Image (cartoon, rainbow over all chains, first blue to last red):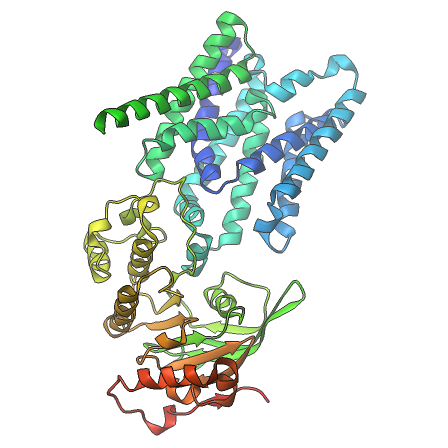
Length: 270
Length: 250
């Protein structure tokens, strides 16, 4: 039954598809709430998690998850959640995590760790276990998204209005940040810690140009994500480009193309 | 808490970064009553409304709400998220579903029915205020909290805005908590004025508050006269029991 999982290309395509599906709604939420920098921070600090995981001989993904959750939890303890998300605070956490992680990884025997794969992803090396953890996490995230979607959108529009009208904003925000931590942990394998934020932001930005409702933006983001994934895997398979970077470059190419088309269309209308 | 109250605040104090924002503020909100909070800049008016709506926690003292209290809220400054595609129609259904008819009615009330299909990010400040005012009336609220509803609205818009607030009260039978820094616009319909300057200087009917020594010390005689002018516009008679200003502290 699971024979098809033996094909590395098929495994990586499926992993990519799963990532695209979950990156679309999560990316939209993060763009709406200007949280792209938080995903970047969690991504950078994830290197520390990888280092710790390898040192303690547990799966790196658990190390990453532990570090990301610790950061989210610490931020939520600060009395004013939103001032804790200042660029300065996040930059300090981000780069300290990255630096500490690189030191840890450097202490490990060279053959036990591929730093490049951590930083930029290695989709084509997706294992069956990777795929399973990606699938389970995505399902959990999708269920949470479906269940809390109205609250998430309301908080994105105005925390003040949402709170006054009965939504428990702090709980919703904490849930959302925890979900981002989960997302970062699973996306790391595919995109690498340095490129996670790109996959959350670039397809969403393209989608925004045409969307009239939040849900439409999510659907179009998924389509743009698919396009980027197709471009990335093609570039990787045929030209031996690194997959993560190839996906990001494809996503940006699609964005530029979209911008050019909308400009041209507007020019013609005027 | 007595049944005839929507909300009761008792000795609410709030300190932020070592600065006392609110000092032992107590008041009550009754159904279908309009309460106006006035006070100079930095008096803690928005902080107080944020405590009422539940946005700020970690204050001292006590806020009791009637169980199941439904609040409609218009914040002072709405940061419009330009990154989210959102029609006005959808904005009205942000926290609850509403029927087509209810949405049309709400928007018509504030004269912005024509904006229904527009994108929120394309609205002017005044249009946005009216749309947000319309949405506070959806879902049969018990209390509408309006933080400086007239900021960003032109003068004719202001008059119309206050007219609407009066209409909401009588049509929806809901209480209104209104923040205003503009003393000239303390409405004749106001049942209760809370004059705030960290502590509650005085409270009561507009004309009684305007004669209170602490009020005069804060705003001067000119402001008192302008309230007096407003109170002459209305034609109802106050009963004796309601017509007094209480002094909260000594």
